[in-house]
Amino acid sequence: MRGTLAAALRLLGVAAASGGLGAAAPLDASAEASCSAAYPQSAGIAKGNWIDISLPLQEGMPVWESAEGLPPVRKDASIEDDDEYNISTFPNLGVHTLTHVDAFKHFAPAGGPHDKRPPGTADDMADMPLEIFNGLVFVVDVPRDVRVLTREVLQKLDIPLTAERVIFKTANTDKRILFTREFDSSYVALDASGAQWAVEHPSLKLVGIDSLSIAYYPHLWSAHRVLLGGGVTALEGAELSQVQPGAYMLHCLPLRIPGCDGSPVRAVLSRMA
Image (tube, rainbow, N blue to C red; front, side):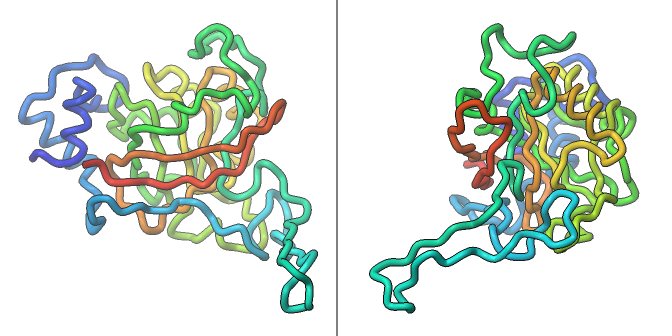
């Protein structure tokens, strides 16, 4: 097979690791076939098209630990009401609302024991390197019976050794957990061992998830602190209902908010040429 993923791996010069972290090797025919089976091409997506994985900012979308969801947009001025222009405000909009990214300072200071960041890397949202959020990404399908992304689970997902960005598609997408007004704490995400696996992976810079948090609800502090303290950031609230597992290009731009610990984003995927 010579599909999108195989081309990506050939460009990177590695094969997918089997059963967790192993030694990188040249991509021979059998490895190429194995990689293409594990991460098939983006079926049904025309070349050059975009897949928006951002959630709509609208009334009733879920808010962390809230039963009410987002409030309606406030119309401060309206042409329909004989004003000369339209002006709207979305009240009480936090930086960790819907599809967003975490700055390193969200839970952890720099300099953890496995911190991958180069010395001097900024902790806050305004100055984090944009290359973290943009580039080759693997959308990885997680078995639907998995409730927690532990080290053991992640080791079985055949994630390439040189993968810098991974987004996990889990049972959250099937449950439409990102479209329920009332916050649901039963979402699938990483525990502390899964976060440690991501930090120990030789290349990962970003881990994404189809829930409002990358951290499993009982492990919020520990998983976030391990992940962010180790120099791996999180893309949270990824809407993956229209995304097949495979290799894509991620285009994701956070707002430049000095001193801040996160930012809403418009995140889209495009099929690789």
